[in-house]
Length: 371
Length: 192
Image 1 (cartoon, one colour):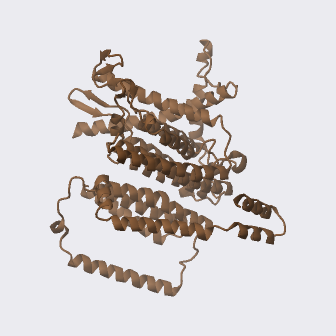
Image 2 (cartoon, chains in turn brown, purple):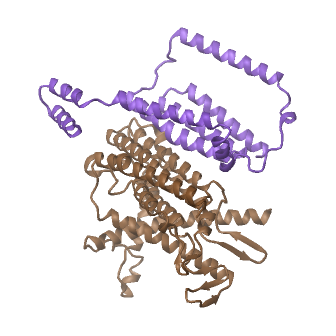
Image 3 (tube, rainbow over the protein chains, first blue to last red):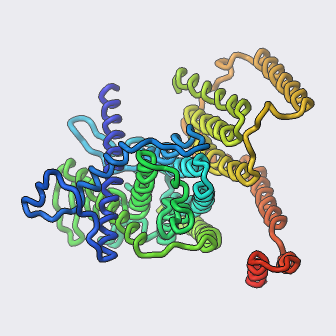
């Protein structure tokens, strides 16, 4: 009991710390990436005693993004505007961040790792209704944004909050439909099980990844997920040319940093969900529990530890690829108009999701097979 | 579920329920209600009904309460200055509350001790498979009737809220000028 509790605690801490670090790193990724896209230099200031320059290294702006900015944000005055609901104003950022972070509890980051006599399932919470859990956390996530907008006693913030909650509710539906179609295909709601099913190959060489059976769901989940994270082209709740900064107009310092962190954690969550549902999660093509079985018949035996670590590495590489894709989309497309946003959600994604669900259900019943 | 956890969740639920009625600001009341519903969802999960618990959180906390929030904002409800409400309303409210309390008291004092009635639940109790099998076999008629009812409600709501193109043009033409009328007329044309 004792050691299992410790293992569980370590898993939980490791996953949360990884997500938070990844969120911080994405901020740097985004600053430098957007600079690359727009032909700028990007973050390049701040260094500790000029060490990098003395060694002749280029300044990549890591210091000011990952160290100076957070210190600045968290040492700023904790400010709430006049007439604001101080309690909710303080609570809202955490109400936004918390559901996103707890959602990662059911995400499997790897297969079973065997250390001595213990076999550790690389997933913080082994829940058999994990897909429902994810939907529940996404649903609860609306509150932080909506209340942040309301509690600021500012019309721009309130408009941003209303826009955000309308948008998130609308796209929750498309997201739910995408996830349900995936669940019907695999016949389970357990994310670890979904990853396991995606192991193996078709025709001797094609990995059995979900993207090949549920391409429509993939598009739905990617689009709805980006709308949920409220970034360009779906950033109407922030819309700085219309609403100053939307729901976090009246936020500064640490609280604003928490909202920003939420955005990045949501990007990571969407990437993680896409990886898990459609790209095999921690599966490496042709890698099984005992080692590689290459298509030609070649075989390379590997110890369990190497296989487990390769799985975790594959999971993170895939996740980073989709984080990068979202950042790329953000810096490429312009913002939607509000009616376009709603039309895309209700007249585009929801009917598409329903049709996809219907077709999936028919096929699953017709072949009487769960994948 | 350990007893201490149950007691904790029950106390939170009761505090939340009190919060709904004793707070002045409608948004605070709504948050207290959301807390109560969330807490009951967690209680369901703790009692082994995981599917129902998560559905409770998704539907009630994630959707219906947000809808309530919209209604509060759209009606622009303000914080109540005094206790509020008519005397008659207070009278009926307290009478109903007293009746409910008496009913619960009688019910629980007559009912057998809970341990006597508690049978062993099946291993897959509360699982999504069992729930689905029940819904699509034993309770199929009720389930389908409910879904038809909901569909009818959705269609009815849209029919009530939607204005026909002719109505839109008429309402647009009654306004002398202004971008609102032009906008509405354009909207009508695009519908027609």
